Image 1 (cartoon, rainbow, N blue to C red):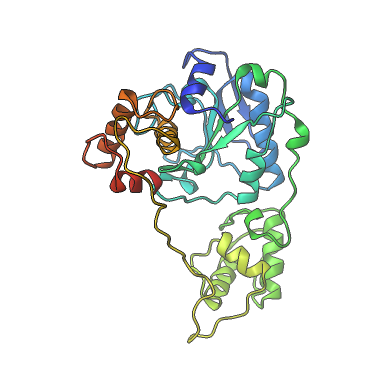
Image 2 (cartoon, rainbow, N blue to C red; image 1 turned 90 degrees about the horizontal axis):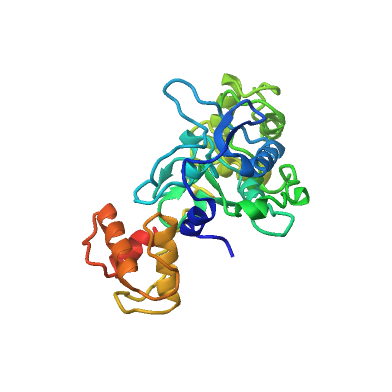
Length: 326
């Protein structure tokens, strides 16, 4: 079972008071102030990012991108952030922003590989903030093992990640002007095969960007000059050009959130437990995750409702569920 945020706070307590250690990632970006007991886990994270050619960016003046330790409370909540315990890292904040919608340039196969890491005792090492139920935090990775569990070491057999798949678009990194490496070489090969050869095989320059834009327009993709999941899908699946009169092959599917019972003080059961877990993941501290809607759960729910501009009545009805599941 993956620990809740409250359980992790208890396991790594106290906040802001531990032996800190910096880790320089393979690109030169730095994760500062990590708990020294978790350093092997973050070395493994770095190894997986390298294997997928995902590039953590360094910070610059006016552009914060990648970091770890911060002695602060959680966003939109009252409990301590896991950054205050040195067991959380943020990677490429500008392209993986915090918000209601999941926006990320991370290949999903890489995320899966990171979540699949295990300790030598077979326990999960990392959780991804992009999986949070309401506010998505795609830049964020947090250790979910305890100090004692990590002391047994990371099972490096579970860290070895496959390179990008020739047939799986989700395994390729997002590319934009300025990118270099094997993924750019493959991009240019695919563009040339599709009839857009005015590119530079060694780097993603202005000519490559122009070729990408032309290709995206020919396939009725989002025309932005960035090679993300949609463009990789079209390139790797060899989508033909789309006539002006034909619809785009890409559809956006919208689905209403699943139905949930209205919950209030005295409610019990698995749906209450789900509510408690969602509140806990967002830092609202509902108390024990026991499936019983008591005073602490109501207080946490009221705090959540206030943060969303909902009526703070402590009743989890359709509007509140909609916000929780957004």
